[in-house]
Amino acid sequence: MTKPLVDIRDLNVTFSGERTVHAVNGLDLSLAPGEVLAILGESGSGKSVMLKTLLRLLPPRRTAISGMISVDGVDVLSLSGRRLADYRGRTVSMVFQEPMLALDPVYSIGDQIAEAVMRHEGLGRRAAMERALDMLTRVRIPSPERRLKVFPHEMSGGMRQRAMIALALACRPKLLLADEPTTALDATVQIQILLLLRELQREFGMGVIFVTHDIGVAVEIADRIAVMYAGNVVETGTVAEVIRDARHPYTKGLLAANLHGAVKGARLEAIRGAPPALERPPEACSFAPRCDFADERCRAALPPVIVPGPGRRVACLLADRLEAAE
Ligand SMILES: Nc1ncnc2c1ncn2[C@@H]1O[C@H](COP(=O)(O)OP(=O)(O)OP(=O)(O)O)[C@@H](O)[C@H]1O
Image (tube, rainbow, N blue to C red):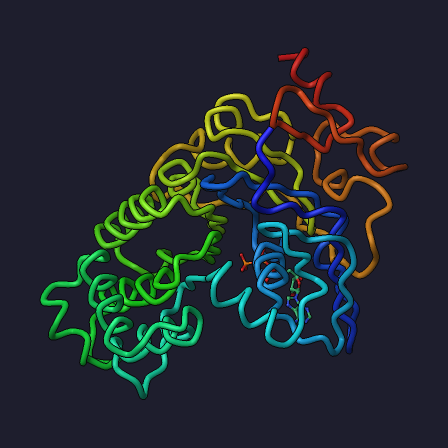
C-alpha cells in the first residue's frame, strides 16, 4: 500500500472562551498522494476547523489540539518557526471562497507570485517572474504578460479566483486545501474553475482536500468523499460508493434531501432536528437524536467504525443491519 500523503489520527480540536466548543472529535482521515477528497457536511460540522488545523492557522490561545497529523511524513502539530513557514509555503497551500483572503491588495499579481517563489524556492527575481508568467498562463488568465502588473482589485471575481489558484500552486505544493472556493461564483464560472483545478491537480499530481456543501461539486471534482458530522467523519468511500450505496443514516438523509445527490447545484438541506451544540465531547453517537433508526445502544456509547470494503468506513452501529434491511 502506498504511504498516505495525509494521515490524521484521533484529532481533537477544542475552543475555550465564553463557551467551550468541541469542534473536532476523534477524527481519523487519510489521503493518498494525488487523490482528491471532498469533505461534505452541514454548517458547523467542523470542516473549516479541520482545514485550518491542517495548515496550523488556529491561534494557540484558547485552542487545544490533540492527536496526530502527518503530511508527506511531516509531523504537522510539532512544527514551529522556519519549518512551519516552509511547510505552509512548499508542502501545503490553500484556496478560499474569498480570494482577497489570500491576495495582498497592495502588490501586483506578478510580484506576489514571484515573491512567494523567491522566498520558498530561493529563485532569483527573473526566474521567479518567469514562473509567475507560467502560472498565469496555466490558469488561463488572458494576456498574462500584461496581467502580471495588475493589482487584485483591477480583476473580475473569476479572474481573481484564477490568480489565487496561480499563487497557491506556484510553489508546487503536494497538498492543496480548498474551502468552498467556487461557492460565490456564478454557475458557468464555477464549472470552469472546477475543471481548471482538476486539470492542474492531475498535471501536478497534487493531493486535494476540497470542502463543499454542494454534492454536485463533490461528484464533479473528487475521487473520494468524506462526510462530516459534529466534528467527526461518519462515512468515507469513493464517490460512487457514497452516492450509490450510502451506509450511514446521516449520509442517506443528506442524499435523500438532495434529489438523490448527484444533481449539480444541489445543496445540503436540513434533515429534521439540529446538530448538537458541541459543548461536551460526544459520549454516544452524535447523530442518534436525529436518526430514525437509533436504539438505546446508539445513545449509550460511541459508534464502532465498520469497514464494509477496502477504503470504506462507516461510524454506525447499525450500518450493516440497515443495509441488509433494504
Ligand atoms: N475560533 C473559534 N472559536 C470558537 N468556536 C469556533 C471557532 N471556529 C469555529 N468554531 C466553532 O466550531 C464549530 C465548527 O465550525 P466550522 O467553521 O469548522 O464548521 P463548518 O463545517 O466549516 O461550517 P460552514 O460550512 O458553515 O463553514 C462551530 O460550532 C463553530 O462555531
